Image 1: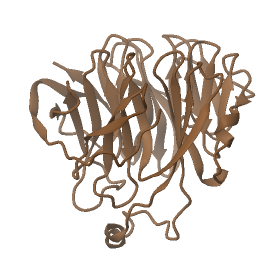
Image 2: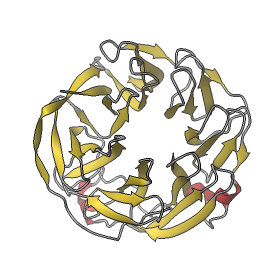
Image 3: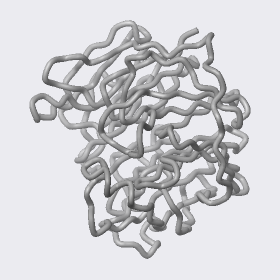
Image 4: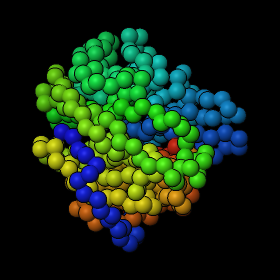
Length: 366
C-alpha cells in the first residue's frame, strides 16, 4: 500500500470561496517578546481540546499545553516537563505524548502526564489500536510495537530491512485503514553538500532542484503482528495519509526544494495501492489533509508568495474543501491567521479545528 509522485501531474483550480462556512480564530497566543509554537492538537472529547508545543521566550523554550474544557471558548496555558512532539488519544481519558526523550501517558484526558520509563527515545509519533496494542516510529530508522500500553517496546524487525543509513532514515507517518490494515511511511535522504535552507539564500534556492530519495513503506495486514517493507525512488516525502473505512484515502507529499510545486495530494486505494494526483498548485503549500466520515475532504496549508516555496516567515493560511476530491473550493479563513505550517483536526462530534505553528487555533463555524 504505497503511492508514487509520478502518476499524474495536474493543477486543480480552486472555486469561489464558501460563504456559509468560516474558519474563525478561537485562540491566539499574543505576547510581547515571546511566541507559541504548536506541534500538535487533539480533542479527546468534543469539549476538551489539547494543543501542545513550546513558548519561545527570549531564546528559551518552555514546554506547554494549551487546554480548553468548553469546546474552545476559553483556553488556559499549563507547563509541561518536556517539549512535546505529538499526541495520540484513544478515547476521552487515555492518551500518549511523544517527547524527544520518550513517551508519556495520561488517564485523565491530558490533565496530568506520567513518563513511561522504558520508552525509546528519538520518536516522532505513536499509534494505538486499543489500550494495550500500539506502535511507535521515529528517526534513526526506529519503529517499535508494544502489547502492554507502552510499558515495554519491541523493535519491528521489518523496519531495519531496507538498506539505508540510519543517520538519514526517518519513519515519520503511521496510519491504519482498519484494525488489521495499516502502513508506516518513511524516507532516507542523505544531506546535500550545501545544507543551507533556501530562505537563507533565495537566489541559490530558486536554482536548486528537488533530488529523488528512497521512500520506505511498511505494510501490515494482520494488525501489526507482521510488516512487509518496500522501497521506491521518488521525489518528495510522504508526510500524511488518511483513510475511510472502505479503504479510500488521501495522501500528502511535500517537496523540500524548488520543485514545480511545493506539495501534492493523492487519492489512494488502500486495497490495490494505486494512486492518482487530485491536487497541486504552485501558489499553495499544503501541510495537512483530513477526511470526514462522509468522504468530504479538507486541505490546510499556506499561501506561497514569490519563488520561495518554503520559508519560516508566516504566510496566509489557506484551507480547501472538496466533496468529490476533484473540485476544490477555497474556504473563508480569518484574515489574521498566518503560519508556516497548519494542521487539521476533528473532534468526535464532527467539529473541525486548525492549529498553526504560530500559536493560533481556529474552528470551522457556519
